[in-house]
View 1: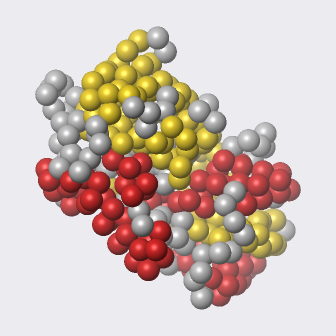
View 2: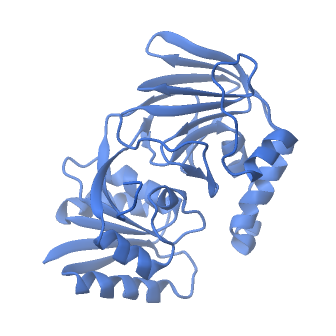
Length: 298
């Protein structure tokens, strides 16, 4: 029998949380798994649970949103022999689940992963924190800082949208220097510097799919914000990225590692979570194994 740990947000506040976990457990048991529940009780719990108990399990299923996934990744990436990971979407934001084409219905998601396959996915590290979906300074990090927690409780995803509109219309600009090893790749002024591992941010598709296991970082730099960027956001991926035109508002680079400095210091957002401030060094020297559905993408 295969042993599995089911990590979920014990403080999510959803009345049907337990019933979802029971449903997941029932499906897993029908596929030959023994399942232990591991509810989190506060910030940092998921990381600790995965780091301490991960070596004892062949599989860890994460029922939650991007924040819970991020915590789990930070625990699992520290293990010498980490278990195989299955993401079951259950939070306010589930962007990396979208990248992996995992259904949002819990039963469908569980069945899809169990009938799918396992693939290795890069897990970049920004200073001392791992991330699986994105790293950002500027607009996205500032949007997170501007979220009203009471509105988040009441409105969920809508609170992110309202904060994004506010931040985009009144952006903060940063002087930056982007380096690869000892070479300056780009420097100037920008409202957003994004390193994408996944293909979705804020439920919106990025302009191109990324290879999840090539050891490279996908870097996007946005010079200007305001209404044009907000309009492009609504067009969900129809942004014209152009790295050849010096005056383009949007630039794209692919690097194996990077060092980023900003003036002033900028808040760092990794997968929607606070991860300190710049300067930052990002590397890709770790990979984890994930269950994914059988689709044309994988």
